[in-house]
Length: 445
Ligand SMILES: NC(=O)c1ccc[n+]([C@@H]2O[C@H](COP(=O)([O-])OP(=O)(O)OC[C@H]3O[C@@H](n4cnc5c(N)ncnc54)[C@H](O)[C@@H]3O)[C@@H](O)[C@H]2O)c1
Image (tube, rainbow, N blue to C red; front, side, top):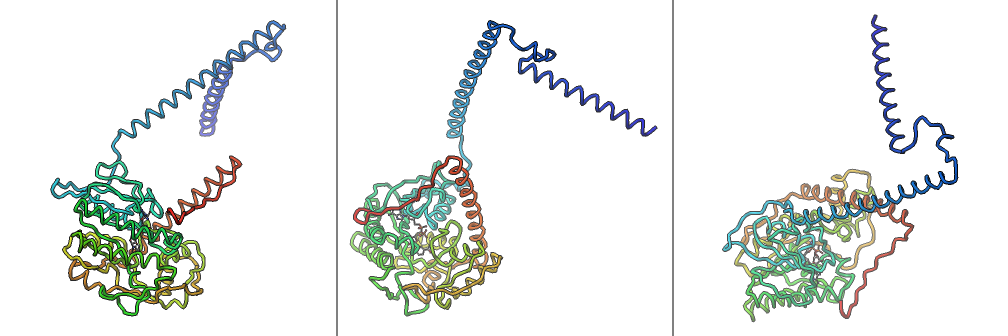
């Protein structure tokens, strides 16, 4: 009885299936406009006239379909334009910013705001409700770092080289424009000096004209290869003026000198932050510095290379801590240079092992030749920042490193995807990928 029921059920399913298939076949042939029951012979033209009629009918059909396709394409283009117009009129979703009234809201210029530190400063000031204007020549910065603010009514991005004067109305200026990592600033040393001298003069001139307060992003490199540890702001430094790092070190020293000259002579309100090694998301993956080198090598399971004997020390601060320090300094009444850095010191070798452990994988740690003028110790004395700004770093090293590793991992996945897509594109278009050359004219650049 049970077997019979199954068989009946199957039979019913089979009948329904066959019925549907038949209907599909009929619809298919109808669409092709072919006779279903006629055999091949009956579809064949019987005379030359009949053949010509069929041929003409088919040509007409093809022409109609071609016109239809063209109309559809035009319609699609129109719809795409409409969509684009609609998207440009639809307010984008931005991170929620605080509302500040006219009295408290400031117009803040950030030179180099599309770079690593600058873009985090942009986020902080935007969220606080200020109007932020970024000026950047995109030498080492990227539009992508601030893309999430593009179109926001409080935000503006200006493509401009700070070596040229700038006329703009602002209340505060954070002057961060300058390549920061050795491979970048050594690529065009003359341009690095110009950015830190002519660029700083332009910024200070602007600050003088509009009576804006200006914060100069200086660096621990003004201490050179220090003979005093940790380095207090009162230490004058030990810099090689003709070494490979001089374009940056001396450039920043002049930048500081210019700031105090403008303060004394032109009454410009200046703040000087001496920034120590900083790391975090959006830092350059290939900037040749310890954190990025080690993370990349560990993520790729390559050997982690330590320059020299690995006993040289560094202290790294997380970018959020630095941004808090910069804003506190700008808001304070303290006018002398202030060290902003994390005083917790590690040897380079220790860093290599910490990063290896956090990333996982099976990289080895190996030593290689020492770098020229590579400082042996770098550790900030942050008593001034503690006393006058009530500031000290808060983000623990491992937490900051984990966030940075996460960013690097995503960036690597993104560039792998991009490489795979462009390989497919170039293969399918049979094109050779052209090498990109950055050229710098040292007279004009
Ligand atoms: N990151 C650190 O560890 C560190 C340490 C000490 C000092 N600093 C200082 O902090 C500032 C920011 O450093 P960063 O790490 O964000 O570097 P970065 O290279 O990511 O950012 C610098 C930005 O300045 C822009 N820029 C360079 N030259 C310019 C020019 N002539 N005109 C306009 N824009 C220009 C770049 O395109 C980039 O967006 C720099 O002045 C740097 O010297 C950084």
